[in-house]
Each structure stands twice: as structure tokens, then as C-alpha cells.
Length: 229
Length: 357
Image (cartoon, rainbow over all chains, first blue to last red; front, side, top):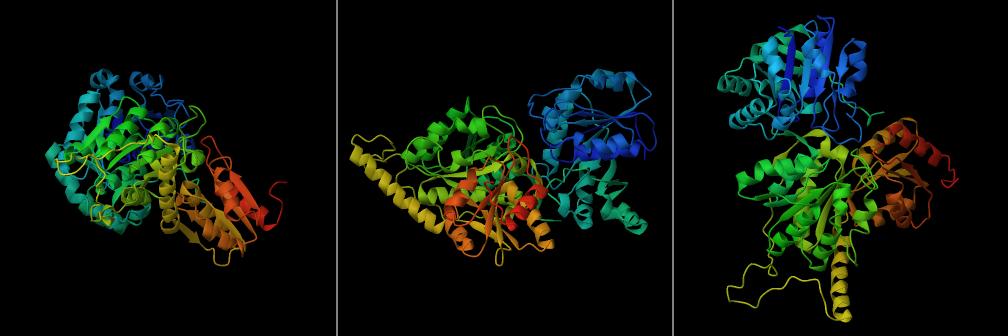
């Protein structure tokens, strides 16, 4: 699977951008030395890339995030170090944007740099099980709002349809048609379908799922687990 | 394709309200409840309803008073410091016997506090939401599904008893995502509101929605009538859930997010051979006093687990009439309790130590 110099995950809030960005950065770190995961989420106060800080550190990934993430400071803040990603062409950057157009606004600041230095992918993350992105019209609207706010155009689609811990393989298989429909309507290629790793254990299962869903990206989740003993 | 959708707790509240026929939402943004307003802003126009971002929390609750007086299902929501601003309006709603649904997704306090989850508005919700003698019916969900279910239920109860029904939750439940079945709720027959200000059509004398009474006796009379209604609510609408309490020596009492944590601690205590159970109040007012008193006849001790300094623990002590010791497992200011901390308290309670020591 192609790894661009800079990959941006954007979409409706709650579609799984942060989990994907973390997993994608870990995957990228197996191929490239200097991977930077940049958390530009200025919307969500609770669930952040910082939840996966240990795993990222273990893989040698540099996490660039607002030092106010997961604290009581309820003010949109962008980390100044973000600029390093654009200035240093030897790095591989993964950007986690906040949800919807409001979250995408943060990217606008860097849109010019992104366009002029080339080699980026901006992926629209979709989850058909989210209540406000269940049909093509809603997704089309969100895509346009994000592109207007960020001043960057999408290059591809990620199907991340899931029901959190209750997700079964058939729940995801059932969204293949929807994902294909979105891809056709928006004129964007479906880059991959994300599936929690435990749902695609074994080569046979994975190959079979691939027939319906296209390229599979196995996902490990790094969520807060404080409730369990 | 699964019939469920993946929702944030805040979105589920908004969807539950819409399913109940709420078409008037007035709010003001504050973390961690803003997704309620955001969801309403997206969906209300498509349903022909009103979404209005008011100029302040005070304005929003007064708009609810207006919509409710006109007989419509209306809602406002906020988080702790913003919610406290609504106190005056809550008192007027009660004084006018108007049904309304209000939501508080609690964060750390007092003052501006913080944006992390808390349960420190328990007193405010259950005992002192505003001036005067009155009660609100307070519902405390503990899952995203229940956020939807009880938001829906709150409207039915509010109309039935002409009372303000409150959803008291916290930032964790508001922000976390779980699969939700949205097809569970269908509104019952609409409840007649002969008191509503909908125009006389020159067919009847004008209705009056008012909380001012010119003589003390008249005011006292209306309060007495209201409290007769509260008594019915206490008898018929007290809700709670028990988990492994049948043979329990130790009973943990916890609501909302804390009850999910407590349940994990109880499972661990059982693995250690400690007979432990959970009583989860679903209505915080009315508080499940009777079932707690019943459990106190068999249990040796209680553990109150809450994200506040022991506000609910006082109600547990009152409910068991101080016949059994009540241990307190508490964190506050936006810090979550851990299952380990609850388990530790269960062990202390099992040893029969004095909780005051």
C-alpha cells in the first residue's frame, strides 16, 4: 500500500480518525525512520492521540500535539512544532484533523505549504454506522464543507465503518456497497477498509474479506481502558 | 446490516429527545456537552423544529419556559457552571408547574473548575436546583443507550407529572461512543395539556401560567398540592437496578459512569470470594430509599462510590437510617475512580473497619 510523504485523516467527528491516524503512524514507522504524528484536533477535548503516547514512543514516532490535550484547558491550540513536518522533507507525516469543517479549519494554515511541496494524501474517513453520515448526500455535504474549511482537496477514502466493541465482520462487510457508492459519487478511490485486527485473524479470513472490501488495514486500538480491572 | 448506530452519549440524548417529539431546543455551548447542541443544529431544521443558540444559559432556560407554557416539548442542556446559571429558571418552571427536560453533563467544579467528568452537581440536582420548595425528577443513565432511552422517558414523565425532568450525566458518558438501537422508542399517546397558553378561540376563559401568589396561604396551598404529586412520583417512578445483591454482605451504591466502574470492582471482589453486590440508583430523585433499607437488613456494610466528595453517600446513610456503616470511595475535580480503588474500599468494608476512622 502506498505511503505518501504526508497523510491527512479528516472526516465527520467520531468516524475514527484518531484511532486510524495512530495505527497508520505505527504501520508507517515499520517502513520509514522519521515518522511524525501530528495531532491538529482543535475540537475534541477528551479522546486524543496522547492516549496512545506509550505505543507511539515505543515505535520511535514523534508525537506533535497541543500540550493542553487531555487537560482542563478548553481552548483550541495548535502545536508550533507542526511546521517541522512541512519544512523537513525527510520526515513522514501523519496528520489527525479534528472533526467536520470546524476541525478541518486547522489545516488551512498549512494548505499552501502542502500544495507547494506535493506528495500528500488527504483521506476522508467514513463510518456508515454514525447517525449523521448514513447516506450519500450527508457525506457529500461534509466532504465539501471540510474541503472549503481546510482549503485542501481529498485524494481518497477510508471505510472505517464500525460499531465499536460490538463490531462483527459481517457488520463491516455490509458497508462495502455504501463505501463503493460514496467512492463513485465523490470520484475518490477507496484506499482501504479498516478492520480491528481481531476480526481478520488468519490469512483465509483476510483474503475473503478483501474480495468484498478491497485493501484491508488491520487496526489495533489504543483507548482508555480505565474501567476494566 | 446491523440496526444499530454508533453514537456519542451527547448525540444519543439529542436523538432521544427528537424521538420523543421535542421540536424546540435552546442552548449555549460548553464543554463537554456541546455535541447535544451540534446534533440539534444539524437535525432540527430538517424536522421543522427550532434550534436556537441563545445569548446565554439564562436566556435558554427562559425560552424553555415560554415553549413549555405554549404546550410544546422543549429542552435545554449545559454543563456544570453553565447549568448552575439556569437555577432561577428551574425554580420558575416548578412554580408554574411546567413540564420541561433539562440536561447537565457534569464537569469538575466548583467555579470554572475543569472540563473533565464529575458528579459533583448531585446536591444541586437533587436538593437545591433553585430557590423555594420544589423537586425535579432526576434520571442518571449509565450507558449511551440509556442516554437515549432516558432522554425519551424524561419527556413522558415531565408531561405526565408537570414537572422538570433532568438528565444528570457526566463528561465521560457524554463523550464516549457505544452502539445504540434507536428503534426502541415510540411516543405514547400525546398527553393533554388543558393549561397550555394556546389561545382561547373565544371558547374558554384565558389560561394563566404564573408563580406569583398574593397571599401566603394560597402559595402554601399550591406547594402542598405539588408535594402530593411528588409523593405519587416517589411511589411510582423510583427506578434502580440491582446486580448480585441477593446474597451480598457488601452493597456498593453508585450511579452513572461510577456504576460501570463499580460493577467491574464487584466482579473482582466476587472472584476474591467477597459477597458483593451493586445497587444503582437510576432516579436520583426520587432516591431508591426503600430497596436500600431492605438491603440493610441483610448486608453488613455499604460502599458509596462517586465522583464527588460524598454528596450521594449522605442519601445512602439516610436510606439505611445509619443502621450500617457507609464507606466512601470518592474522587473529584475531573479525576475518575478506578476499579482498584472501589475494590480496596470493598475489602475495608468486609473487614468491618470503622469508616470514620
